[in-house]
Image 1 (cartoon, rainbow, N blue to C red):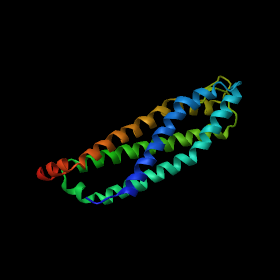
Image 2: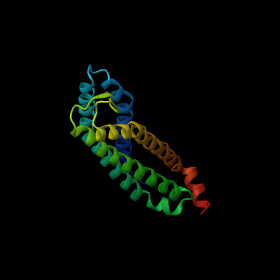
Image 3: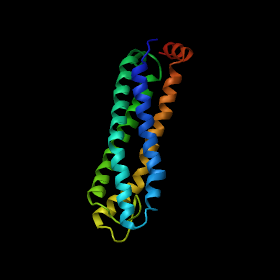
Image 4: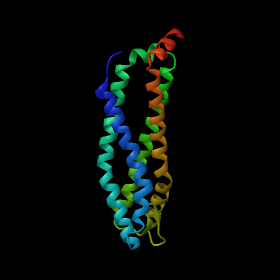
Amino acid sequence: MARNTLSRSLHDLGLSAWFGGTLANAVALNAAAGEAGSASDTGRVANAGWDRWTPVNAAAIGAHLIGSVGQLLGNRRRVAEQQGVAGMSALKTTLTAAALGVTAYSRALGKVVSDAGGTPSRSGTKPSKRAKAEVAAAQAKLDQLQWVIPALTGALVVVSSYAGEQQRPSEVARGLAQR
């Protein structure tokens, strides 16, 4: 089998950062922002944290996508010939598309919140009663979506582990024999 170290590294590092960063921000940043002092400071701190994460997240997603394409190209023969690999690839593609969609939608909602400035909040995603209706609605949606991205990217980690297991020589031999 050919080595695809660069594409595998981009795939794995990008996915790791995408998963880990969104999980850490959901677990820690949003809750910690609630301890900033005042409701306006809470909104300001949460916005600053997420705004700093956005370009890093975009780079991580880009690296993951470049690596994914490289992995698909490097394994195109296995995808076509080995039993189960095409289905796994389709599942990874579906999960990736869902994670990208939720990430893009979350960023659009985050921009609404960020553009409003130091919006009064109880935490990074819990609006105070003093928040404008549009911003409060965006925060409420973000409160739910902050867990969807780590769930989808975590599922991608699991499927990627399964894909790695499919590359074991015994699995390749069995998958080719079943075709």
